[in-house]
Length: 412
Image (cartoon, rainbow, N blue to C red; front, side, top):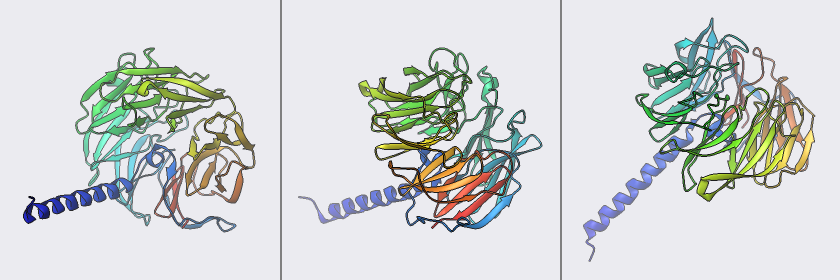
């Protein structure tokens, strides 16, 4: 017989478990990394389905970030963003009202071509992590921006920098921080996120591929949980526990640039590259130990704008093929292509596409395979240099970075 006290203890244990789960869920929802969770899909509700003719209300803007193309990261209601001034990289911290809370220099940044910061900050377990265009990985304490550890992985792992500077948002899985030095012996590595100590080394595709400006993803639903990323000549799957290569699929273009994080869904990976390549759809087989090509499209050749999966369709723009596309996820059939606005990057939320073109146009469009259905559009007039940073949605606010300027628009 179960005693009354035992029953009470069981209820208390269950309640505590639920509270911890709820607290964890809140914490997880309050952290936005590269493209939210690397998918480009946001989960806000109550957003406007159309904007005024001159665009949504601009709540605030901050001018003075310096040069850069990195995107906003958010943790515990604080906004994190990087920028470069006079060759030095700085980490900026804002509240959601646009007040600058802190600013920290972290070292040299990329100033040789298309100057400025690149990879987006990753927040995790009270720390912040970033990778500079010079191959420096820095771990900050989130509370005061003091540096916990840092190392230059290009020097430490005998790797080469890239033509346009290293660009990667570090991926954290448990205690492991995953980055891609691209060295011949240390191609992909896992570091202890707390200390920077090396945990494992992967040969990657086994050909000494350089890094390719790609931020990896984690697939935890396979028999072999794994990291997937694109290197200079391959898409690769790496056992997250050991660093062992599971599979490699050849994907080359004329510049060895594969900047789009693969899109995952329905046990398939959409791997999209510009510069004359296209998109390969791969199906994971044998519990994630191998892949097979499902379809290939040379038309879907996004360079840095990425794609999003909504239902049975994927949406995004091309590069040489200067259209916006919708493609059937399972078959590769092009449902539409439209050049109503310049190509660019895309995110999605609540059945709508948020499209930011390289010409500074921003559009809100319905996510439908029928047509590129633009509902509203306006021009980004503030800021400097290229329109390349990916936008972010957080608590009804659209954050857009254009060079030295961060803008916050009310879209709820």
